[in-house]
Image (cartoon, rainbow, N blue to C red; front, side):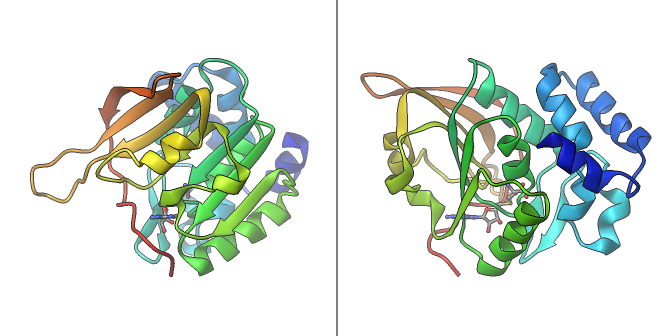
Amino acid sequence: MSGETDLIGVGMTSQRTRNRLTDRLRVQGIVDHHILGVIGSTPRHLFVDEALSHRAYEDTSLPIGFNQTISQPYIVARMTEVLLSEGPVDNVLEVGTGSGYQAVILAQLVKRVFTVERIGPLLEKAAARFRMLRLRNISYRHADGGVGWPERGPFDGIIVTASPRHIPQELVDQLAEGGRMVLPLGTDDGTGDTQNLVLVTRTSEGFVSEVLEPVHFVPLVKGKS
Ligand code: SAH
């Protein structure tokens, strides 16, 4: 699978540019070699408009239209690392497909990815990228992902890439026991409220949560458009 993504990327950007990005992620504390390898071989320039493709290997979030952004590579790496840190994970739900980049990184590291996006045109573009990269283990759906994808659960992992105010109970309910959910929590709207990355682990009695670090995500919005 990663062989195919390698092929598509070759010639479009130099490997040296991508190595600079993974070197930077290493300096920021990302240690998982599989994750660094997959980020180093995935053509991020295909996930942004051509006019921004020269910035695709900078460690920064970039606009993807509809007031949304493709996440900063460090955040993608960090959330993926937290999600997979207790060992192999079979099925993962992603809420907020956006450009499809996070889903493509995950699809190269786990068995199956289910991703939900509320903005139809963004999802269509992301789906075209999944096809172009020949990743057949990604299922996608145009819906409000705040309520998860109950028909496909329970999930070993859930990654939420837009920020709710509170931990969505529907998502906790769709985690398998011992399953992990990584999500930004809180708003970041200038009212003094802060937003943090949080790890939620499902237990037999309920769940436990741990605050990891401050982050900046777009808000999780109800309904689809
Ligand atoms: N993971 C993306 C970045 C996501 S930006 C990437 O790798 O590019 C956040 C995305 O979450 C946006 O596309 C936004 O439309 C979507 N979103 C916000 N609220 C949502 C909801 N309730 N259900 C599904 N998607 C949602």
